Length: 455
Ligand SMILES: [Zn+2]
Image (cartoon, rainbow, N blue to C red; front, side, top):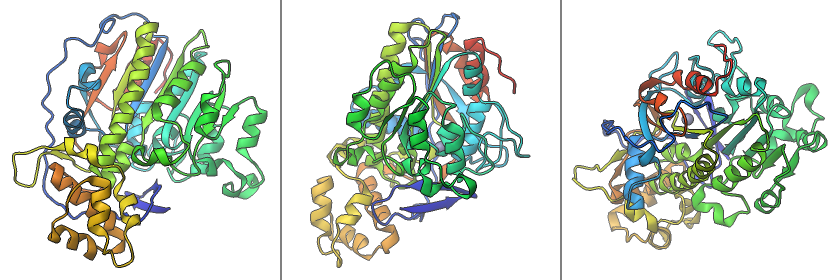
């Protein structure tokens, strides 16, 4: 595992081999933000009925370009296409280009903070989150992610630390406060990761003793009973596998985790607040890996379908979906051509990281490896580019060549500051229409649930 440092924060990536944050493509991209307001947000979309349950879904890094490329990849309108209601500004307190910690803090607390900070003000003061407000109102709470469950986006909903890198401090704050926790990051709950006077604690064992049902793989998750109201599922030491590589693991899908969370949380008559993050759409953007981005967008859409099925039956559930920022400055089309071919990415069956790890020491098998995992016949020139790439940017070079063939452009390996789409379904969904600020999100959720929310 390596760590990618940026904007003073730490993004932990589960890496197979050789990813580097080197931006090679500097083409300027203006993401298309034109959209038409969907009249049909889906009944009971326009009612002002009281909302008992909220499912807040965050496809990390997902902007309009991801939405359009995913539509091309899928070959038809997406589930999210039918739910579009508005757009959201993403800037943080100190930067037009936010990181996930500041973006999530705004979306969870209604207060802007500096990049890297988790639900504290720039001065370090703790601010209430919408999840905490829902809990105070007697509702059950849950967090689901494919990153570590202590990563920035889930962390902002239920912990307060100066730096997003303090994942073991975050773990200590999550356990016992949250009813359902599902994701990666088991290492942060074990004694070896807890320093100082916490060093002897094993949060996993403590959780078991405190009444959590614990699952450590897909089979154990699926075997849980609907009666398990408190569930701790940690399926990888660090981040979970990218959807492209998940079939080589015994990890559950995001949809399976979402379904389990809904079953557990819905037993509370007073309702629930659940946050579900498609964490790795962002990681794919950082890696400029177009196929990883599409496969994790697909996995996220399947999780949205679980949430919608629940909401349609329940009629008192509001589903809101919004990315926290764009990652990668993706474009639809590029490289001087009037072409967009994200559909060819169906033939890609591994991440760039995985393919880079399959190369032999002199990289003489590059054409065979790329053919096996992408079905692309590399030109001699393309093969040479990969052969000559430095060790730490081999995967990036593979991803750039695959992206060129799909006419998916990238302008950075970091985040960008474009607005992102907001999607909603259920009672009060129309109150998320128009151009909102990221700080508006938790305030409108609190109004919809008719609960006290202080910030
Ligand atoms: Zn993010």
